Image 1: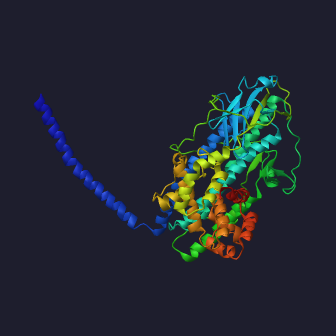
Image 2: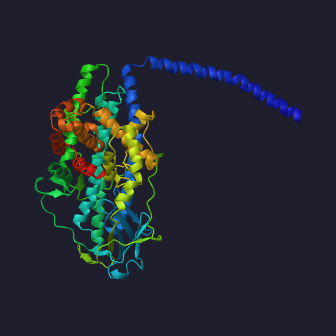
Length: 573
């Protein structure tokens, strides 16, 4: 029996030895055929394949960003359903909810306050809302609630609150559009051989896509608020004819009636386009840049052509329409398909009410303020009882001192002023290593993995890929990355600006919005050419440069950021 098994095994081995070489030979010839086809492939097809590869590569991170945005929308929808507000954490604010979502703790590091709020029935006694909780834990310290300021407010589903929730989406999209600018600028300066026309066009199309995603997201909020008002017996506001864009503002954005859209659909009662002037100007500037870049590429490199769907002047006119729009009779729309392997967002932080030994009392005398919104006529409505205390006066200083040695080490290594790094860290995260914004950006210096993170990886770590969010939550890695990126801006991108103070202002703005957008502020044609912008900058005094940036930067958020960081540098000198 054993002899038969051995013979059978020998036969199998012989078959394998005879077959595999034949397969290997066939595979080799097939590989040679494929290589020959690649060699003889037209140059234009090679470029097209490379562009497609790059687009897919960049889209991987964007798919993760879209999934993060989608999950955030779902979380905010649940919160709005209970609280009337979708308040969530951002770079300078921590928001935690209990398991039942009926207790909320908000630590506002920018305002230096902590608030605990309890969602209770309308007829509940506010005095017993906290059920004996007399202390609030914040960053390892226990704050007494004995003399906290008390406020009572009804859960608010008013049109004003609805606009606030919509504005969150508008602000988030504008931040994401700004990052597309930074990404495009990084690709252009990487000297990959990719025509600027392709890079500008891709950023432009992604911005248009972001604007288009805003419509169903905003419409979903409209639908949710209408449903809640109906449930609670709150009458809908009387519709009025929309005013001119200059006359009425919604959360800082203009309200514009789009008559053509209203007339084109009998199903839509009214369409109100909500689009900020800065968003519109930037998208149009991108379109203009694409047209110019295409012309330059065709003139310099006839063999390298941009994709067939390049934006022409006709397309520019058509693509002005996609805007941050709100349909008063919203339609259900499917969500964007997301990459199956995308990283999952961080789990929602849970509220803990466990005290620690030390008690700190640093609050104002008790004061009760009742804020009454439109009172619901239904007993199912809720009210929010809140207690606010100030954080200890030395809380910011304590957090800052924790990272001062690390900042000094990295600032010396990268030849960047430590006071600048500290001022940026203060403004970006209030010295919180676990901070995350809605871009999303991560950690102490709020690094975006696919722009600043990728730049530092490629130039200094010799890794041609984005950074991981997990790494950016590690303080030494985050501070190293943020400071190295400041070095890139100061010593590479903006090196043609000769005056140190003027360059400092440009670096601060560029950290927030990219060097290309800084160039736009000085170039009359709104181009992102920094060398060209430097000629204008070098003809100005530092004060003139600072004021010009405040007047001409593409994004209002960046203007405020420049003011904030400049004002804080002296705190750390």
